Length: 484
Image (tube, rainbow, N blue to C red; front, side):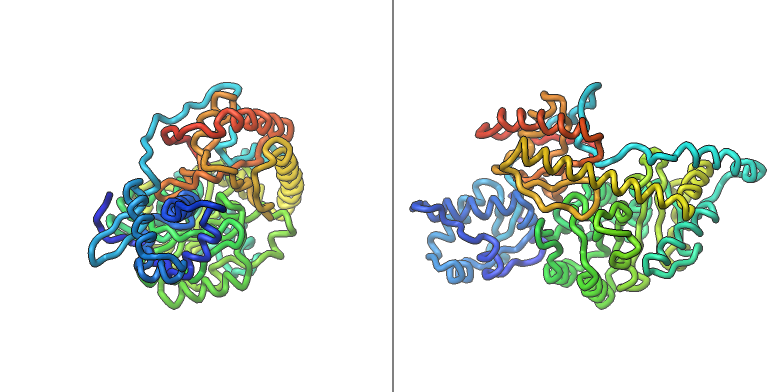
């Protein structure tokens, strides 16, 4: 149990009371146990991220209408279980998600249906773009092949798309990278160093958490409500109290929840970031997978509301094919100059041939194929929804307006146990603890719908067998699987 003062924001007694809701079990006389269990549930669900400062005992007792003795007993239970830490003069805070060990990564096997990666097969028509790129490559063979900023034609296509979406952009505001993850790492290296704090959503993209930790920076989570979305007052409080060097946000079909921040929320969030002068990396890897309309009619990028402090990251992996390994950064020319000067320590640019392929795919006529892909993915989403309701009717979820996955609430904390059991039934799942800064989220599971329809149905049939085998079983060690 740590004794260090936490980095997270403080939750008020009133807010905690609303969050806990009806925490007493009907007919129960074990008030302290009920309260501790309710707090634990919200820690595991990610609604009370690790580092969150709890209200003082008197404030909490007054708000909940119980005695301080009951509050003290509940805190004692939480401290014993490793979920809460306290220090005289500093109060109490969420310090862990329970005592869970780790076990080796589950390895991929032939015949396993992969529901760990939210990654689709190649876009139909990719080979046509490859043939066009082969012809265009001739014009580049006389040069040295190093295009650190990216292929000019590709940068033009990307800039045109941002402009069409409501964010005027010129090619010199775009840098092509070797994927969105590489783009984020470049931004991370420029913006933060060891000991710096990085604001992230909870839950969020696991590889971003890993990248932050790899630079010895400290991720500071802000809870994201799986129904109502971004807690903008919570973000403002975290910015004020933790003073992060920058933030990492996914406001379009957030990974893993599938939520999208509306225009009013973007304006409010952009204003908040601009006032606090907090840079933010916005990941738009899923922005083109909009099932409610044309992406050009959607809310403009967050950068349109908050100026030059936003670095927008995009990718071809989710919309076209992960095998292209291409992404980009859209930022002010000044920020891109800084990124270019530091990029040489990481790589010397993305492959020319891959960029020629993507440039062909991003020609105006290429968006017709992308529109058809959205129709197909929407159909696969609906197939998965029906399969979940058929095979796992106790699971609940919000129908995502875009993206590649459902974020399902399970009937009991069993995400890790389910992932272990599902592997023995031929399905690879990513336990929801991978999406939390400090684990937890055991009542949740991300289920992608990138597989063909028949495989989605078979995968959920197998998952239902795994569910039956783990209901009521004891906890098992945590599982780590590759996630995209």
